[in-house]
Length: 322
Image (cartoon, rainbow, N blue to C red; front, side, top):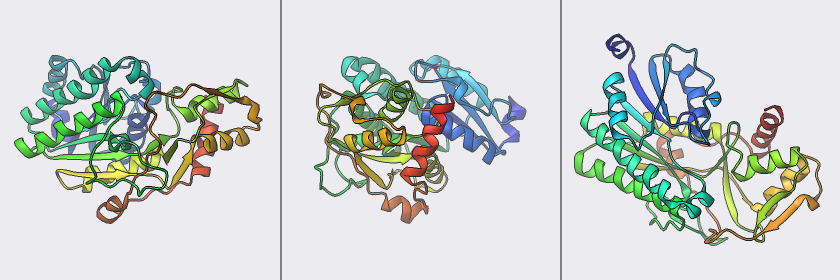
């Protein structure tokens, strides 16, 4: 690996690169940056599918199956590749699963992140980029202003609490040990390669199969949506231009209630409203998330470019063909 280490300007360890956002990042970045070497580390749990990654033949990409909870295995990978940077996507991310099984979220999202921080410090990495979520801010009222980076964190689910905890560890390693860190918090992503448990791919695949869709409660919970490729570009901007110790919101421009989103999907797939089944609401279901991304626009020169209509069309086409 010495020749590999000397050949590339950056050696970027990408955790969770077979997952939804991570695979979209790799499919875009590996070809964009031929002078960077990308090490994709993924445990290939149920939501991580290696077929999502379409750059296997590129000379600046490699894959290692490993679990970030396993510190010894992760150190073996660090010794083998000597990464210079980390972009940390790997996480358990489904809120419903966090309610039924919180333990795995603490083990992966908190302990797993801490393992990576231990190694980043030990091997003197130049940047640790942590991928987080708008859910760490907690629930907003329907007409409250959007969340800003210096707002307090009030996570309400075991998932969002684990992500907020991971953020606090990243901050601690920056403040105490001087580790170069950046955190990006994105709103709800949608697009190709998303596992079919999340609302947009779940509803699309159900409707394509002429199955009813399960809508929580009254459907009035509001989410802010960003097309995954726009988020990838925002992550890339923060990775290259972000200031150490800073946090950047990466939000979309479209806020929709879940019932409005469902209506749009029904219309796009030529289905009637009778295809909706209202189900018991999720415990502690947050009312609304919304991000103010003006800091990323001002400091990074980033803003989302894909309209919701355009992104949804691409997403439907993907699941129709998969």
